[in-house]
Length: 189
Image (cartoon, rainbow, N blue to C red; front, side, top):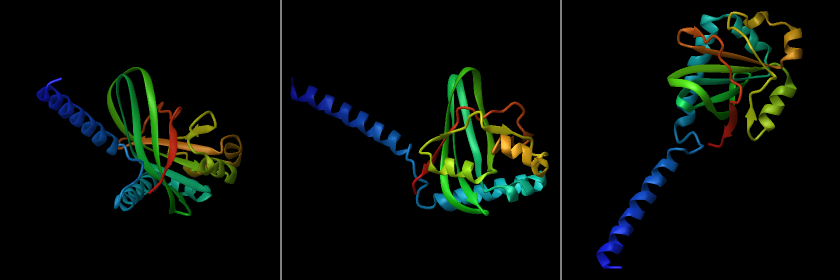
């Protein structure tokens, strides 16, 4: 192999490796140096939006052992897609952990949408299961409610569904939205 040809391959390898490194750096799992403060500010805004627009959610949060607020989830795809976002778990309205969420989607979909959601853990066991899991996935045990229901959810609801999910956007509740298959992973700062 000539020296020129060898240098050509070395440059290609260096550029490819550098590009891959930049892509992987963008996928870091932490919240970054000031990321916690920024994320907490977004969580505060999401919580305030829910409490002000749907006053019953304040009562629901007060009944909960913990609330996971996910301020902004971006979902996009063309046939095959996914969703990603970050948020915070609060106990007594104090952040105890940060979480990321990811979901793969398949089927007919074109374009992108953004939404927020909150998970209300209504039993100590449900909150404990969530916090102990290395990758908790939303499944059949999650009950979807409208923000208007908020505090009117009774004891029989919490016994059947210890986790209540509210999925909403800037224009209000997203009808028919589901978190099935969404996986939550604790972020290590």
